[in-house]
Amino acid sequence: MVAGWPEGRPAGGPNIEAVSPIEPGRSALHGRLFDAVLFDLDGTLVDSTAAVRRSWVAWANEHSVDARLLEGNHGLPAAQIVASVLEPHRCQAALARIVELEIADVAGIGVLPGAVEALAALGPATSAIVTSCTQVLAQARIAAAGLRAPNVVVTADDVVSGKPDPAPYLLGARRLGVDPARCLVVEDAPSGLVAARRAGAATLAVSTTTAAHELDADAVVASLADVRLCLDADGVRVLPGRGAPAV
Image 1: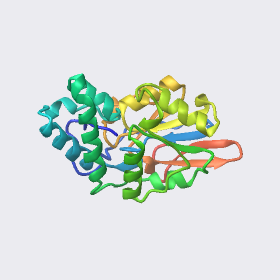
Image 2 (image 1 turned 120 degrees about the horizontal axis):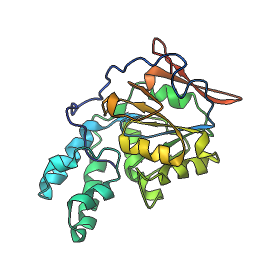
Image 3 (image 1 turned 90 degrees about the horizontal axis):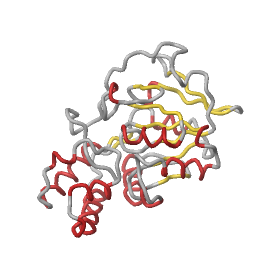
Image 4 (image 1 turned 30 degrees about the vertical axis):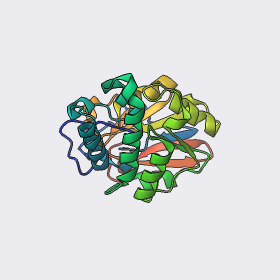
């Protein structure tokens, strides 16, 4: 469950911006092998920006909160965001309300470029979704997008501390039975990238919701359509997509 939206981003649709070419052989991902890939959900696999905005604006109006205070919180669990803007005695009911609003609004949610192909390239033993959504919200958005999810889906309900704490990604790796240091995390949010680095994983960022220059990752691309994830007996490799700069 996430809130916030990057300033200057349109409410309806991803920000598939141009990303500076990565010189062949210069990316930290070039030539590396991974045992598994852990994907964020919102902004990485599915475009839910408009639904998120509508839900949180409605919530802010109901709770007399300046909606501008929610900007920049993309990727964080809703419980953390609610606690940051409301008094403790109001948080439980307010959290229940944003859960209700977000589950009810899945209009316009769709798959982001390259997401279907990326998941299809990996078997169930080498991929997972790690999201700040609750389990029921993750299921709703995955279903609304028509996405075929991997077997392992880690949600906010599974951990005590959410991103930027590394706990969600550490749990995702553990459920797959792999070393976090042998994982690649795909994220669109700075908080998620921090969590991935703290877990010891390599990072690939997509600039769908955040400007490329604000994403601190081993490699940054516009979307998953710019890379190909290739699984063979040795592991997972990240290769450039057709017509995309090398990673």
